[in-house]
Length: 103
Image (cartoon, rainbow, N blue to C red; front, side, top):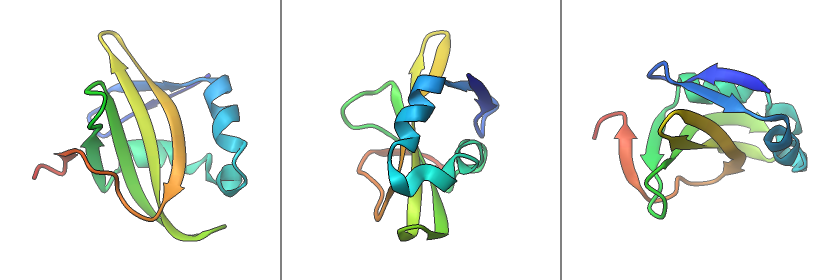
């Protein structure tokens, strides 16, 4: 298991099972090292529209295996825990309430 801190210093864990799931996607194979960077230095953070305990962290990545894309790291926050659910590359940000930078 890996442990990181987000841009607010909150601890977030990434389990081996979740990392294996993320790396099953061929376009994500070289993106593992970028996950803590996205959490620590996101360009945008949005709250999920469907689950208020989930935040989506975005950082634009140039020259990935599939071109220039946003790397999204999805984090679930519980009362005393926070963990990465998944991470993926996307062309555009999902709708949701923007929490960083402050709108």
